[in-house]
Amino acid sequence: MNVYPTGCCATLAAPAISDDEADATAELFRALADPARVKIVNQLANASGPVCACEIVPALGLAQPTVSHHLKKLTDAGLLDREQRGKWAYFSLNPDAVRTLASVVDLKEVCC
Image (tube, rainbow, N blue to C red; front, side, top):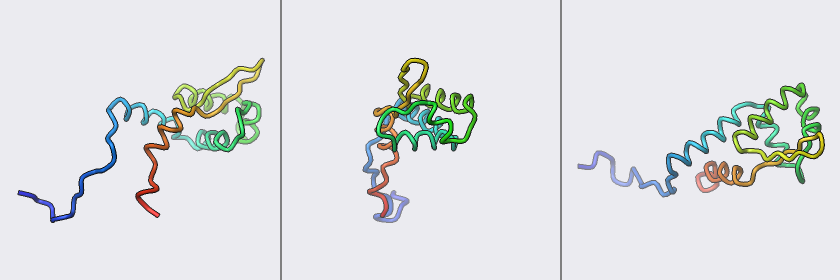
């Protein structure tokens, strides 16, 4: 016996992700659970190439050790790629992580 009204509950059309994929994606979102980290990701998304850590510090208005902490968290989570150039570290978004986040939050078919 169907307890739902006819036509009420459509089958989910979105492909399901595995438990491992869900865990990995949740880790990416956890890394973004700080406003400073969201700002860093936004800055890097709008940059034309890798950005030196020395440019991120003044843009955020935070102390250098705090920015380094946030950059490490984002890098450890796999959201950022880090490239050492002499004494400076340059950061860019990891394309695979960006695709993962985009696939989870792609809501253009849902609204508007």
